[in-house]
Length: 72
Image 1 (cartoon, rainbow, N blue to C red):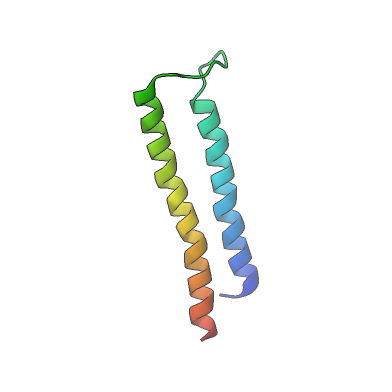
Image 2: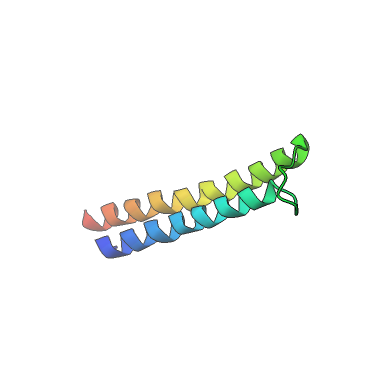
């Protein structure tokens, strides 16, 4: 994997994290813009967010690993 491909993988992963973070912000507010205070709901939403974000961050590590393996 060349450096440009690694950079593109980083961008793709972090762009997704950015979008997910924006979505999370919206999900922790109701339709009137008030923060949701239901702790069980918040826990579930945050757990889902963390699971997906971890996957995206693993994509960064994987891209670096693939580059390093290809380089020798």
